[in-house]
Length: 167
Image (cartoon, rainbow, N blue to C red):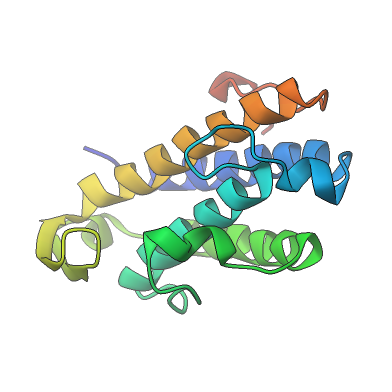
């Protein structure tokens, strides 16, 4: 399904895209980032917090970082309290992805991962390769929402096409 090279590419893509979105979001005021824009998590700030939370919950399941601060999806949009804290946490999380990607092996991608899912309220087991794809897909999904909100707010995030990923 995927290879270590796939993980490396998408970890780099994740960082590149987050840098673009955070640069664009940084051009807005706090009130603009906090404005409810009708997305699932409401605001740019809340959606970026949920994305950080999601990355933390998944990579903690792969033993790559600590679990998120917030206990549930419902409170995930409050993972950090300020724009500065979110920026710092995002940068650190992206580095964790990059560090993980250069050490991951084919064996690390094989087999199943079992965890207790708060969303499903039960223990779940799925193939690791499938879950790694899910992590990157989840990121892309929510970054797409943020990209649309930023564009509507007049900010200018960069291109999102994977083939433009810098070498």
